[in-house]
Amino acid sequence: MAAFLLYHFSCAIDNFLFILGLSRIAMDTKNAKILLVEDDAKVCAFINKGLTEEGFEVSIALNGKEGYQMAISNNFDLLILDIMLPEMNGMEICKAVREENKQVPILFLTALGSSENIAMGLNSGADDYLAKPFKFIELIARVKSLLRRSRNFNSNIPDNSYRFADIKLNDSAKTVSRNGKKIALTSTEYKLLLAFLKAPGRVISRTELLENVWGVNYDIGTNVVDVYVNYLRKKLEKENNERLIHTVIGMGYVLKEDDEDTE
Image 1 (cartoon, helix red, strand yellow):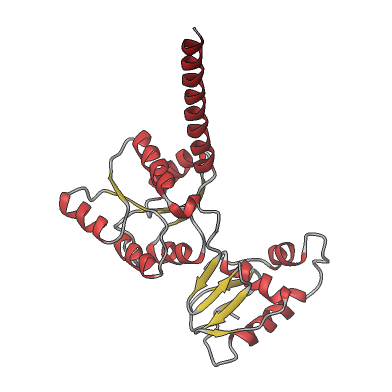
Image 2 (cartoon, rainbow, N blue to C red):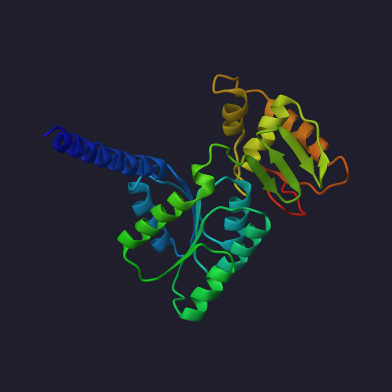
């Protein structure tokens, strides 16, 4: 009788641990950060809505160049890429991301569903491939599977590097370099650069920069943002490097690779 009770108790413990393990997997994947690169606005909105309802944090890019820049400048847990994208196609993004030594999981979600296309996509460095039209339940299952298998996502040591053009910021080591040369920044200059690197290509208002760098209670009537942007520019451009932080009159500043300023 004792052996019988012990057996059933052991089975109950095993079942509990199994269920607990599944719960932890669900919790681990729920808040994952996903980059969706899709040029069809309606399809993008549909996918974004479904992923958000599943608890994922979704960022969106509507063209390939923007998607690539976001992919290498941020620490996403998963990339979902269309292939037929303007400016830079999905396979080019995938190859370029892999060349940056980014091990983030990549899923192609595309209308190109032939065996040849699937083989090309996987050979370009993708981890999975799903052809349109698709069932959303299958997309979610593939997303969760990739996140579970991802060593990066389950690692306790985050990759806190941000890159844009020839600038690299390591947020773990608190170091900044351009063209491989280290740049010494003050704490405020560092926070300001980090704010730009987290949103490349997006115009950031002075008010938003004040809130992110100096705190929401800081006097918004001051020109401190302009002063520190000027300090930061001088250090980044010291070796005759091209300007990357541009002024957008009446709106704020933007980090972009343009030869022409908008001042």
